[in-house]
Image 1 (cartoon, rainbow, N blue to C red):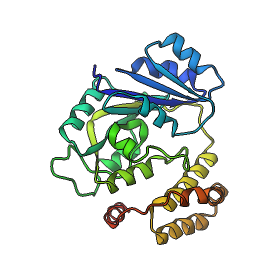
Image 2: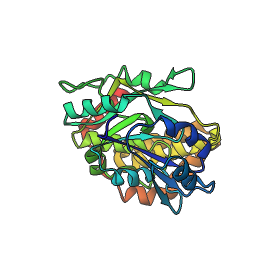
Image 3: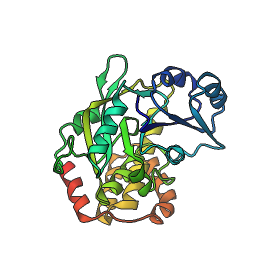
Image 4: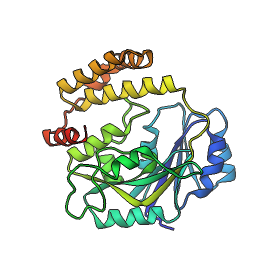
Length: 278
């Protein structure tokens, strides 16, 4: 069991899921509670006393993970959701890879979904990434990630500010990935590092999730992409014409001053990589 990796979990009102997932975690664990109303912090302290619990007074979304990363004292941090966990030995393998590759900021795992252990759809895409690979990179170069399948170099994650409060939740990984690559860090898909995800039955309605995804894609574009891309994203949303997408556009407009306050367009070489992916 490695003490080089801390697992950080952000949760809210998911005690039944945590009862299943927490016994699987190896090494130090920091759980950041996003203002739960179901007694999660007390339950975790009682049943899993080895887990460090940090209570937030309100739900701040994905930036709660930043609190956990800041509290971690290890050089590497693995993210997990309340309904996910890492396979035995996976964190040791990820730490070894990160130690061998000092410019590698993130190891993306092979995520197996549900009891059937179906390969997550994004992982199938990452395994065939068309991006050029830096010499010696341990797997395909990637420009995106799923948080619950990623192990990060703590230094690099904090360097780019972690997850931001403009996006909050759903698609929060995109801006972090863009900033890491813009600063010269590598991200790689490493197939022999494995995470398990058993999606919770308590989930947002499909329409609400689509609204958040559309909103956050637009906000990320406002923060990091050239204006033609921003306008193209807005046009695509308008042409989609469905109410959840349009609501996402309206929510993005309301949050746009905050996004524009963080605007820092990525270098052209990052846009070139994005063009390869599209």
